[in-house]
Amino acid sequence: MDCRVSEIVERQRAFFASGATRPLEFRREALRKLRRALMERENEIAEALRKDLHKSPFESYLTETGLVLAEIDLHLRCLKGWMRPRRVATPFFLQPATSRTQYEPLGVALIISPWNYPLQLTLNPLLGAISAGCCAVLKPSPSAPHTAAVMHGMIRELFDESYIAVVEDAPGVMDQLLDTAFDILFYTGGGEFGRTVMTAAARNLTPVVLELGGKSPCIVGAEANLEVAARRIVWGKLLNAGQTCVAPDYLLVHESVAEPLLEEMKRAVVRFFGDDPSKSDDYPRMISVRAAERMEQLLGTASRILWGGEVRSAEKYVAPSFVEAPEESPLWQEEIFGPLLPVRTFVRLESAIAFVNDRPKPLALYYFGSRRESRNVLVATSSGGFCLNDTIMHLANNRLPFGGVGYSGMGRYHGRESFLAFSNCRAVLCNSTRFDLPVRYAPYKGLKWVKKIF
Image: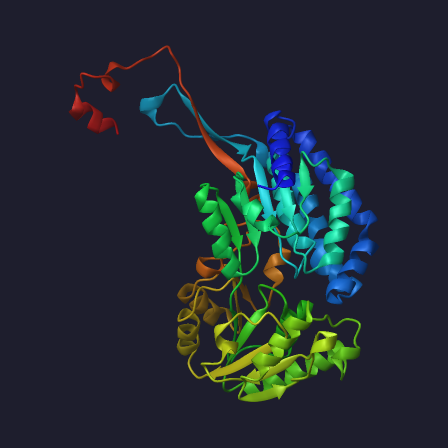
């Protein structure tokens, strides 16, 4: 193992063993320090996100800094209650014993974060580690280097490496981290590398939280409000130029409303970004030339481009695009992770549900239409999250758990779920020595009586 990685982990284990991270006030002060630093560096963060992803300051705050600040505020308000032991009932045959659950920190955590929301998807899991009383090693993505540099400088300034450390990218570093025995491993990213992470964690029996992705469907029923649906679908799809794990990945629309919906969606694009989105300060870019070239290849598998289709790879620009594609196209098989939206019509809602269920369980599922039909969709499908008449906004409620199911991930976080993800829920029974029933001890007698009380 690299001596640098080894040194950081050993120092964190020693610091954790000292008990310094356990007091409520220590955790709160760490949260406050992080909050102050985020507010002081808001402009610096926005500039870094602009350089990495061409995000506007508004989008940067809405989807990155603002979400982290709101999460910190919730943790500061609720942490004392989350930490409080909880009394549970004790069966009468165990009395006068008392029973409770209490939460203890798991220990030293490894947090591996992606490039698409480089600030939020690094710091939100970190808040769970801090609130739970853990130490943490952060491994940001090198694909968003400007944001990673800001975070590294901020964390180094705020915290000693024996508590929270950022490991920079270098050849072999990821392998070294995955070979290390951590107490919990939190990974956000693609499913392919997620398997590698889970395999590595299994070697040390390390618990994992995997926040992956997949193809999140958007279904539009015949009774949908088309104008509102169009705005919200376009907004959700084009946020961060489609590089969002819960972006609508494909559109299933009732054939009776397909044409008017597409017209409304085209109008929404123009209203948001003008006739030429490449000139809009509010329209992001792909993370790399390679990612833009992949979008161009995917467009080449479409049977018909309904809107858009322009790609300028050198500028990392991909226009908002609605397409039709044959079912064997990778547009229907791979997570798109870009501003391309394949469209398919249906006649009966059951066929749309069957189309969704024939694929791996998604991270999110969106339905636009009546509440009556939405209940059918909700009951007949499975997904990490669900929105009726909206996209992505379930993430904005940090009282809701966020996570996947099946191929889209495992484990939950946000709000209290973040605290729980990095905690061990410990069962505690406190018995009395005043009574000691002989029936529990050998030689065993009185089975009939025992069966009556259990």
